[in-house]
Image (cartoon, rainbow, N blue to C red; front, side, top):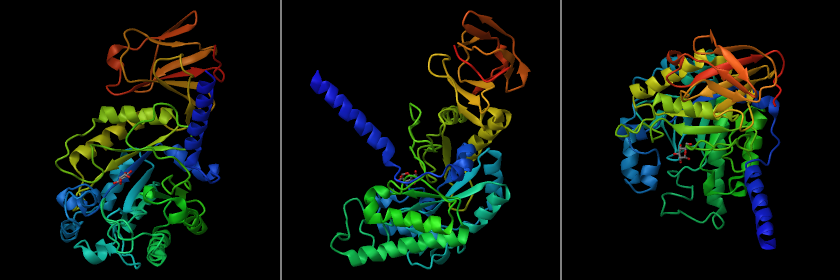
Amino acid sequence: MKKLIVLLFLGSLCIRAVHSQHNRVEIDDKKMEWFHEAKLGIFIHWGIYAVHGVSESWSFFNNYMSHEDYMKQLDGFTAKNYNPAYWADLIAQSGAKYVVLTSRHHDGVALWDSKMGGCNVVQNTPAKKDLIAPLADAVRKKGIKFGLYYSLPDWSYNDYNVYTRDIRRYDIQKDTVRWNKFLKYMKGQLHELSVNYNPDLFWFDGDWEHNAKEWTSADIRKQLLAYNPATIINSRLNEYGDYATPEQGVPIARPASKYWELCMTINDSWGYQPHDNQYKSANQILRIFVDCITAGGNLLLDIGPKEDGTIDSRQVEVLTVLGQWIKTHQEAVYGIQAGLPDGYFYGKTALSMDKKTLYLYLDNIPAGEVSVKGLESNIKNVRLLRNNKTLAYKTKGNNTYIHVDKNDYDPNVSVIAIDFEQALQLY
Ligand code: GLC
């Protein structure tokens, strides 16, 4: 028994260590305000991998094809129908408040004309132009924040130590000259990104290949913040980020970190893969979106444009449905905080900042009236956000029963707003 207690105690310490691991830095709440309020972001994986529709960078890393064949896609990357104003419209209509574009994935192909070396679309593809600046301008005109994804590893760069899953070019402990050359290249590229586009957010990836000391993560953070102290940095700079980035799986419980974002693909691929038909429906994505925002996080939903810059209609459709839903449910999306503790309602909930409105999110149609327990405060009004109808309700004992006409339920997620005379008190 004693052993078990000691083990449980040690276990709880480990869990705490893991939760706090993503954060060795002081988080500036003021800086995080727009991010916390944004709720939806659009992730864009655009690169030469869209030419043959293969998995971004991983296809040569995992030996599905040779590096040489992978890089031949450079010749087919045209961006000839790239219309950043259309992308910005689509993103604005989806309700998203920020964008994160892959400035350079693990394959090392930069979307701008880097002077630091490596490979880029301006010098090495028929696209022949900077693809970042026009999107940054177009989205910012619409009041949307602009973020850049940047992979720490560059598997194509000759002085980076990792090449494929089986090939290491050298040992960084032994060949510090080569490693430092790589660091200079990487930090130089990051400086270019700061100066050229002044991103509101840097979205790092690939930190698993080295530790913070090896990447010099603390210095990287310092460099970016020296240029713009308001830049937000995700958690994949080892422990030097501002917020946590779970990937693909919705957290079951409210995450411990104050700020977080779930990044997720629409089908199973980050980049454009035409044979991947595993699309999530708009309904599934909307329900995941509600999971995220009611647990205090954001959803960063990915799209993968084709090599010419057009976007698959199935991706457009999902963004459109999301936007329509967000538009009619705005008050239950922005300016919300954690809702009811467990046991009061079978479903997701949130409260307005003044706690005078409670939102119930229903992704099922209940067997009878909607029931919520333990509301002590006087109810002023009950509304269905979808059509703004006032709903009839009755209180019996500890239960409030709300009547919704079956035909009024939203096909995706219905939201009921309960307004109180004063800040909500619970039984
Ligand atoms: C993973 C993958 C990468 C993708 C990223 C997006 O880290 O390695 O290909 O870009 O997730 O979150």
